[in-house]
Length: 374
Ligand code: ADP
Image (cartoon, rainbow, N blue to C red; front, side):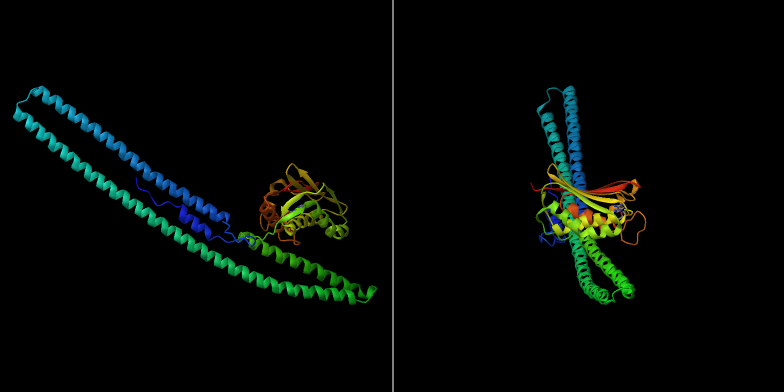
């Protein structure tokens, strides 16, 4: 049987073209690319199986032909025996010559058939090998081009966001000065209010820039992560500290229940980003007088971080959809619907899970599960 050039070597070369992570510089196959490679492999396996099946059909046909020939020979022998069981020497020679002729005819026919089959198999193997090589090459080129475009886009985004951030920090500084230099008392009230609004808008614009950069990285499969062993309950404490004033201003109580140190290999800034997103949402969607609680417990060899609120809740049909990009239950101009999508990707990049449980008008709980190191 012919060896049809397999796909493994080339396909693995195709995978090498996938983008690299900022952390490891190792090729990281994107899920879509992996799926394309898998379906290509399935298609090739089907083609190989069809070639194999054809060979099996030919073997069955050969066996059938041999049986027909054996039966013909037997019939001829019986007929000869009936005509003349002890033939004269010249008849015997005649019969033997006739048998020899038939044997040669059959051998020649077999040879023609075998050559035909051989040529067909060879050309099929050549065709598949050439065709596969061409497909793999196209795929490699296409992925290289896509990566170049992504790299150019990333560079552009990085430059623009750098510029925007420096304008925003100047703006934040001006707002701070405006607030500081405003006359004390009612005279400066309006200036202080405008300065505060400007500062809030600067914070929101900064968050938006970061979110858009993160979305770009997620799509390119290179969300940066710098992991180290961290106590997750410490991260919960930090989150609560940074949201204490915001919760107070919103009239929402913010409390925590924490277990003993929970050590995990995580990127602490990324986990803080997830907790900040969940706590900010919980405060945002909880009416005045409500409460938000962050719990942090051990569940076997995993940490379970829960952010619960007594807010407006989420209808059951939206519980999974809210984790998609730009998805909001009802349009909310305070956000873009990116935070949960980014958070889910961050948690999954840590080998964990993030999901929501909720009852409308009662409240919601967002649950993060992350594997612990010990
Ligand atoms: P956004 O910045 O718009 O809040 P998110 O991705 O963080 O984006 O959240 C997506 C949507 O999920 C929100 O707009 C809101 O509709 C819903 N949501 C998130 N958290 C809560 C919560 N704690 N209570 C009710 N709805 C929530």
